[in-house]
Length: 349
Length: 91
Image 1 (cartoon, each protein chain N blue to C red):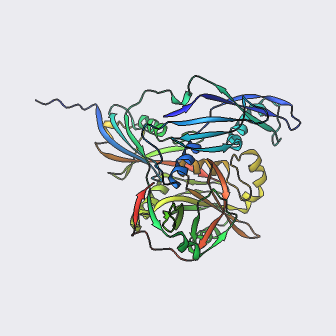
Image 2: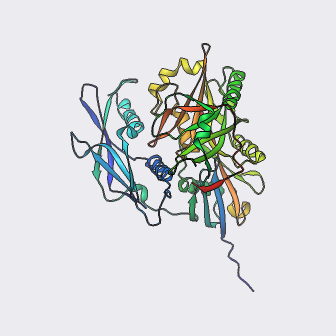
């Protein structure tokens, strides 16, 4: 049961502080809730507890006080985590469209935003509706393999900047090479694939954390590839699942990869300012990329690899979930794929 | 003579393409369409269904895609497994 006693609104202001106005917003809490479930899982706790209430509380701004917030806190049972104001960045961008239409903002103009929380009767999202069926339960489980993290670390090298809240991710060089080859073969067209692998828990520590192992990439076939768009179709997913089933290694879809061509780079700044709602810095995920990641890979351990192919060089960037937002993150490159899938299966997520 | 309730399908299993979200649903109205079933499942599985994402339903038993206009009672049986497959863009 979700307990949320506040309605949220975003106030936009010009850079000089002049207020443009306030827009009520419907917040999608699911990424934050998923992150909380992941936090619990990493701490060896069940993702939910029978009868436990999930609560969302505003964190009042220490300088301005209520109704202005500097973030929010989510509780599941007796475990909580705080989320930053950046969680509302996408909603602020959507709110800006209102002022763009009125001509009070011009395209590309930067603005400030603040978030307010007002007490309300009940969360509108909780209102029940008519249904064609009854639900037994919504389940999503993934086997967790007890493995030594050190064994992976000893045969890997870091790539990119690591963040303390991220679980380690290990990607074999061979997987990167395959994706690179496919990207180069595709030329100016976008291409992509699905990353498959396993979730592990470090058996070398008493309270071992989770880590992710990518074991293979499945090229995305039956796609519609264009210069700046790649469409995954129903046939793509059927084909990927068939490939996974054929491998018989109990692998799960843990993420995806796709390429950005030099044309994407040329229009990068324009796309970033107009469309991107992701909290990324370097190689970016577009709005479409973020929607795909949210739609298909919403579990907090899921990853997205972007391969940037320009005349100057070919580079990689990895993205993953962090505090309910998609963030640029580091990973480790391994030289070999470990053969641990068939042994020591223990527990589920 | 035994009366059989043919107005509902007792149980269906549904999942998204990644397998990260699965659910079991009961007492599915057979007079409804596959399209109406999808709408309900998208909400239940918290899958976005705006911004140009179109979902198809794959019936695993037959390995075919169901049409949204098909009647649930004609297309599905007890304990069938279906997968929601989106046409979705990256770019």
